[in-house]
Amino acid sequence: MSRDLPPLNALRAFEATARLNSVSQAAEQLNVTHGAVSRQIKVLEEHLGVSLFVKEGRGLKLTDAGVRLRDASSEAFDRLRNVCTELTQSHSDAPFVLGCSGSLLARWFIPRLGRLKADLPDLRLHLSAGEGDLDPRRSGLDAWLVFAEPPWPTDMQVYELASERIGPVLSPRYVHYPQLCQAPASALLGEPLLHTTSRPQAWPSWAQQSAINVGDLKYGQGFEHLYYLLEAAVAGLGVAIAPEPLVAEDLRAGRLTAPWGFKQTPAQLALWVPKRVADGRARQLAQWLKAELAQD
Picture (cartoon, rainbow, N blue to C red):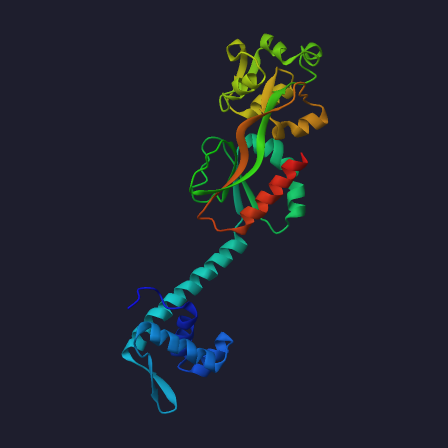
């Protein structure tokens, strides 16, 4: 006998008939004809190689095999109904929890929350800020927005949103701004560069692409996180380096300038979604994020 499960429609027809003890009532509940239910029961009996019902007067009576299958199928369908109800309620009631770094949250996401709510009014988004401690695999986190380099982990659905572009930025308030804003990128070799321990590779990566000897870079004040680094740059304390999206608002407002532009790195800004999260909201959010980044 085949080890495959019988067709689902045949099991549904049998379960309803056995539960209601009536082919006609089963057909009404399943919104099909009396003949369709009878045919599905016959398909199931042929698949299993046993009789499930015998005629008794004008009605039907379950065989011993039918009783066993009724009990098993009723329990299975009850569990499926309960789980589907829980999932539906969870999907509609629970917010979609998105993790990202504090700098990305403060400098890029929060200024766009108004547009997000206007464009996706049905998306209940909860933002969870963190740095290296965020893990999209942890319970309670539905997705993670992060700058990272491929290859991507196999247990994640990764939506690539935009290539990372980084560049030096400084404020017009910086004491050497008048000289630097007209100078080539090599002029930065004479400056104590602001840097962050969370992105130590940023300055070397930019220098290599700018044909500048990495060993000639001089580092000044360091900061634990990128958010503080950029606040220091806005305050005129030195030259910082940052991903373009995180300084877009500052550049538009004139709080920061990027005299040497931005250079692409191997990294991507991507939305990581655990494959266990079968949720269309992630795809919807990824599409919105990609459109916003393209607009920037």
